[in-house]
Image 1 (cartoon, rainbow, N blue to C red):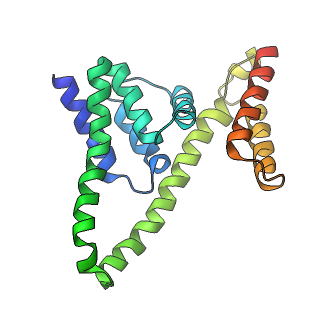
Image 2: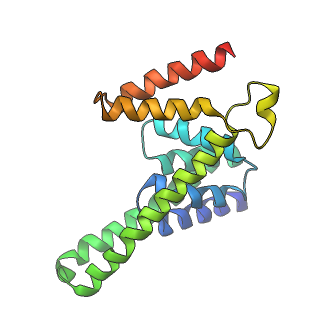
Image 3: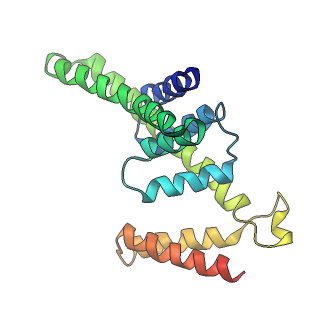
Length: 190
């Protein structure tokens, strides 16, 4: 029972202090899960990728995954409730108070301060995932096992994905499927 309460408390903290959506929560989620799992950056990046392609918000999927790993189904339930409850409670309060404080310089100032923090959290998540995927990446040869090795395959997949979305206007889901198949072929052959 103590583990379940700890899972709930950690993910409640993630849900309470993370702004900007699931991806902005990733650095805080990674810090929090170290108390329950020794998931490295590469495995965490894999978990994030899996959370992105499964239905639902990335933070909820990540909380469910870590909770399941740490405490089975009850752990998944407690971690998921922990990450969802703060948003639910905050939205109840905000909805009740929104009309009263609409146009308040204090509220507008708070939002002006939160926006740059959200961008910073998103950039931190991008850098964190890049470190786990682009620098270390999947090890497919002995030379890639060197910690300083820079893996160019994910960089190429990333660049082609950007081009397919921005120039050819392909849908992100189609690009994910294409690049997933390309990754399976490239890493399956090597």
